[in-house]
Length: 150
Image 1 (cartoon, rainbow, N blue to C red):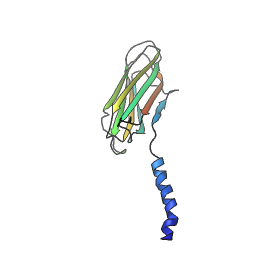
Image 2: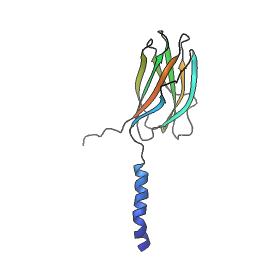
Image 3: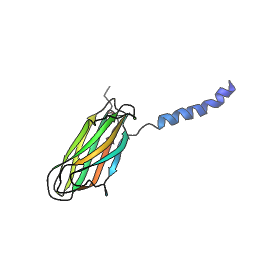
Image 4: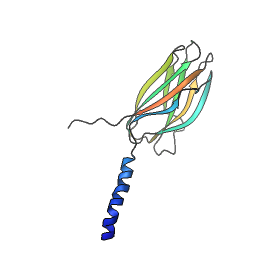
């Protein structure tokens, strides 16, 4: 019995460590700008994952700057996974970001993903052949659920 009493503080510390290591709300960048370029009329592929298993709603923001004053779209695709190992063969989330001349283009969207454990950025497709895009950022926003009034 004395051995159990002696181990109890250590067991509580270990249990608290697992609870304290829970996923935190906040912003997480998959791509952080700089020289993340997508050349004209091309597709860049990625395998960048973000754990979202503790959050039902996830915001995603994509921004970039085009090299010329032209129009077109950039398609940013994400695949979902329930187990953080096996991902959709065909990504089911696509953000379409219209070019904004040489100004920063930005799209923000929110997704309800209650059963999804992980999102993976799979590709960025640039459809315009007249320019490239640079300073590409992809940011996830994970926010704790709002408390409901009692």
